[in-house]
Image (cartoon, rainbow, N blue to C red; front, side):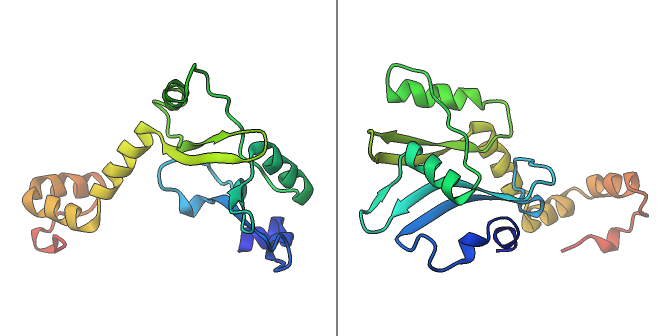
Length: 168
C-alpha cells in the first residue's frame, strides 16, 4: 500500500477501474525470495482481468492501460519457436543459469487472452527449494547432528564454542 500511495495514488481510489482486477508484481528489498532487485521498490502491472466479461486483457490493451494510468508494465518477451512447446522451452532456456523468477506466457488472439500461465525458471525453483530446506527445524537438526560443523562456523565468525548452547 505504501508503494501505491507514493507512486500510484490512483490505485487507492475505490472508483478507479471498478470493473477490473489489476494484477501486479510487487518488488521491494525485504520481499526478496531469490531474485535480487537491489533497492528497487515498485509495482509492475502483469495483468488485468475484466470482471464483467470474465477475461484477461491482451498485452496491447494492457500496455494502453499502463500508459493511461501511468503504471509500470512488465516487458513483453517474444518467444521464438514453431509451436507453443518450442516457444515455452526457448523462453525457459533464456533464463536458465540466472536468478530470474520466470515469465507469464499468454496465448491470445487479437482481442483477448485465451490462456495465461506463469512459468518459473528452473534455477529459481532449485534455489527456492534449497532455501525452503534451510528452515529453522532443518538447521537445528544439522547443528545437533554435526556439532563440529557448528563449532567451525561459530569460530569463523569470532564466537567462542559453547557445546551447551546449541539451539534446540
